[in-house]
Length: 171
Image (cartoon, rainbow, N blue to C red):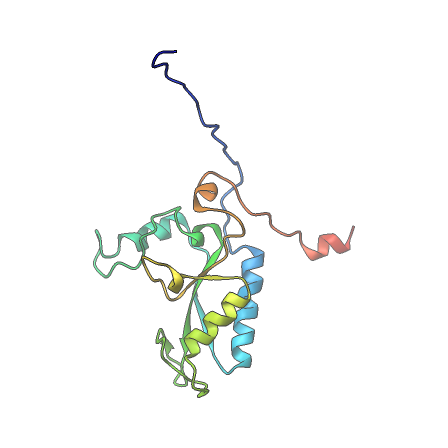
């Protein structure tokens, strides 16, 4: 067995689930709970982004590159959990009704940053926060991977969608 090359092919799994067209129901439910729990603390959360098409992601990716503006993402189309209905972005509404991204703002006057109070609620609900990322900090970003990597999602695998309550009640 002199310098024999062992050849091995990794099996290529391919899912065939269609691309989603909206937020995953689990993410949508948790989004609503986030808004309600924040409101209970006197914080007005505004969801600025949810599901995003691959084309929309490409447009955002081009900002600060081939288009004017600052770079706001390093995720190309298909590389963001937004593209699979598994991410949301948020901001706060201040007492003047303005939408703000001020991570120090304390509109409920409890001595804590409203932004970080929202992040704590989100984490309690199972979201991962973009502000915890090591390289690119994305402070408005919240996501739930539901056990799927971007690679798996790009290969056509999707988290299951819960069945509608109405169809369960009719069975």
